[in-house]
Image 1 (spheres, each protein chain N blue to C red):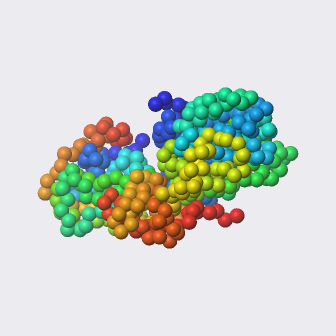
Image 2: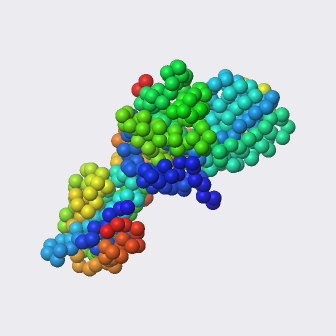
Image 3: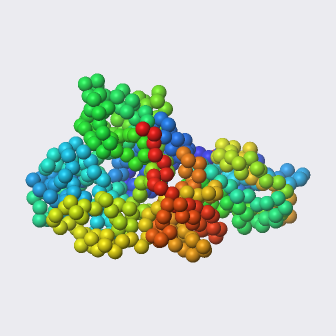
Length: 127
Length: 370
């Protein structure tokens, strides 16, 4: 069963967000989503400086089998994107909560977020 | 839709497969990574459960004449021990299914349709058999089918067969079959497949399927065999340019649209067959759109249903597409207006609102080195 990292918060659309209160938050996709997508072969991320809006699409994730929209879990300005996952998207499958992070954002407003426990229960993940 | 399970369902569960519904069957989609499974078949070997496919026996004095009437090919002309790819069409020339027919003798043939179509094909065959001295028996529910595909497939099978039968394996030609004992199981061993690699398909009664599966997996371990699900099966067949019923083939398409004209034996068969008049007319008229291969110049793939554009105008539709794991660029099969179907034609695929450049290329996309 796919792992749900306990220290993160999640959107219903399977993005995770890590906020430690200092500096920009980090956004990625959950292992549950990465597993369901299959081997990821292409990601389209928002540009640095772009404003993303909670609950709205801000990119695309393409696997061998399908294409999915990437939704931002928060509203804010993108400060950095992970170029490593753009050049080697398999990193998202291999390490979705670590090296497979997608972008960093200065949060002005959070969307509705779930705790790890709530997300795991709703999506059959393992804490 | 009825939920069907193959005799190997428990094996798949043990291996941690994720499942998908395919033609009313719960089938393994993948076991680990579909890309790893794909590469294993190209470089070593893959083990597939294809027990969802149908098996329909046609026996009796008029078996050959009956199949010549019921299908579009000249099946009576197959040599014993050989197989032939064919189609079953309706009176309008639409494709009910594509299938492989194996000839055991002039009074005994095995017809293998696709999973979701097997009941329809069995019923159509039974109906078309009324005027012939033949028996049509649908053995799908009692028969398992396991495929061993990839460059190491032969070596793995040799490990599982008695030396006295090795020639039955090594001398077997593409689209030929023998009755062989593999790991103690009497199987029909056919050198056929849907991956573009060398490989075999093994038919046997359900009772022996799990035991055979485990024996092949064990014997293949040293060669790098991995169990493979339908995700890799689909990417492998796409690279090999092989059509999938429901994507490239349907009741709305004629064999000529799909580039399968040579399969229709209009000349070599003298008698009537189901769909003949419509197929003659379709051949005469020529297709408006034909099936082509598309190669993407970017990284994003076209998917089934995406429009194909020329100068912003819709001139076709993608039927299957994804990034090719072997070739490293997106590939797609698409129906395209014949005037834009020439090799080398530059076209766009509408990727969710953004036109991305593709080019018409020859099929198959991938051809193995012999």
